[in-house]
Picture 1 (cartoon, rainbow over the protein chains, first blue to last red):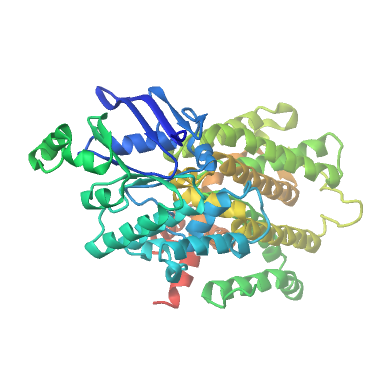
Picture 2 (picture 1 turned 180 degrees about the horizontal axis):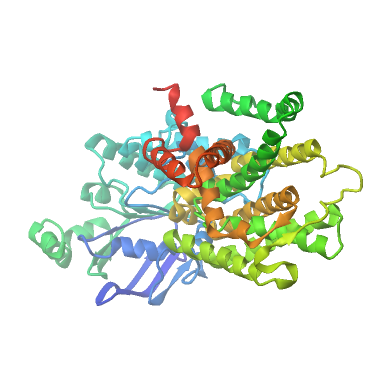
Length: 255
Length: 315
C-alpha cells in the first residue's frame, strides 16, 4: 500500500461547547477519490477548513505528502499543492473569469513583487488560465465578469481556479451545491475526468454523485468517523443507514 | 496599448492638456492667482492619487494619510532649518522617512480590518500631529518657516513660479504613471484581489498582508513627495497639515473623483479645492455647500465623477 498523500490523526476542533471535529483520523491515498459524507452539521466544512489551514485544530495533526502541515498557514499549504473549492462560491466577483484563474496560476509562479509589466499580458499566465477554463468548459466565458456568470458557471470556475494552482490534492466542498440536474450531470462528468489526474477529497450531499465517483467513502456524524470503506460496503453498513442513508428523520434530527 | 476612447478617458486627456497649458494662460492673461491655486491643486492631486492606490485599489481605508504630507514636509523643513538646503539631500530623505513611517504604521495597523483599521491609522496620524506640535525647536504649534526653497544646484529654480508648477506637474504625471503600471502589474492584481476576497487569495497561495503592506508603503512614499512639494510651495510647514481633517479632505477628493479610477483623484482635487476657493469668497463656512455636494455624489454617483462619466455612454 502506498504512503497516504494526506494523513489526519486524532484531529479535534471545538467551538465553545460543541466539538465539531471529534478525534478524527483519516487517510487519503494518492490517486483515489475519497468522498466525505454526513448529515448537516456533521463537521464536513470544518474539517475541510482545517485541512486547508483556514481554521486551526485544537489538537491532532495533519500530514500532507509526508510533511507535518498542522500549523502551516493556508497560503503555504496551497504552495505545497493543496487546493480547495468553497461550498459557498468564493471568487473575486469584480474580476473576469480568466483573471480569477490567472491569479491562481500567478500565485504558483514565484513571488508577485513585480510592479511594472502588465500581468494581463503575460502569455504563460494567460495560457495556463485559458487551459484551465477550457478544462471546465468555460473557455468561451473567459472575459465575463464573475458577477455576470450563472451559479453553475461560478461553480465550474471555482474548480478551474483550484486546478490552476496545479494541486496534488483537490478538496472540493460540495461542488454540486445548488446545481440543477443537467449542471450536476456535467459536473459529475467533469470530476470523472479530473480524478484521472489528481487526488480528490469530495464533500458532497448528492448521494448519487458520491456513489458514482468515490473509491472510498468516509461517513462523519457529529464530527466523528463512523465508517470508512468502499461504496458498496458503506451502502450496507448498518450504523450508516441508521445515521444517514434512507432515514430522512435521522437527517432532519441531526440537522 | 491604446487606451479606449470613452468619456472618462477623453475628460482625463483634456484635463492633462489644460494642466500643461495653464502657465501659458496665466502668462497671457496676467492671472497669477490661478497658477498659485493650481500649483496647490496639483500637489494635493498627487497626495490624493497616492491615497487612491491603497483606498481605491487596495481597499485599505486609511484615515491618516495626511500624516505623510507632514512627514515629507517636515523632512524638508527641518533639514532647511539645520542649514542643509540641497534638494538632492532633502527630497530623498523626505521620501525615505515617509516610507519608513508608512512601514511602521502599516505593519501595526494592517493586522486590523474595517473600522479598526480606519481608527488606528487616524490615531497614528494624530500622534504624528502632536509630536510635531511638541517640536519646539522647529516651531512647535506655530509651524516652521522655510526661508529658502530646496536647491537643485541650478538645475531647476523652485522659486520660479512656472518652473515650480511644472515640477509639481511632472511629479503628478510621474506618480500617476507609476500607479497605472503598478495597478496592472502582478503586484497590483494581487492587491486588488485581496480587496475583493482576501480568504480566496490566501487559499490560492498569496500571503495577503505582505502585499498590502508593500502597497501601503508605496502610497506613503508618494504622499511624502507631495509633502515635500507642499512645504516648498507654502515656504512653511506646520502640524496643521497632518490634522485629521486634512486626511478627511484627501479622502473626500478620492471619493468625489472616483475611488479606484486612475484619474479620479485628480478631478476630485480640482473640484474640491476650486469649490473651496470660490465658496470662501462668499462665506467662511464652505462646508455648508461642500458637504451636501459630497452627500449627493456618494448617494447618486457611486464611483464618483469618473464613475458618472463612465456610465454616460451606457445610459
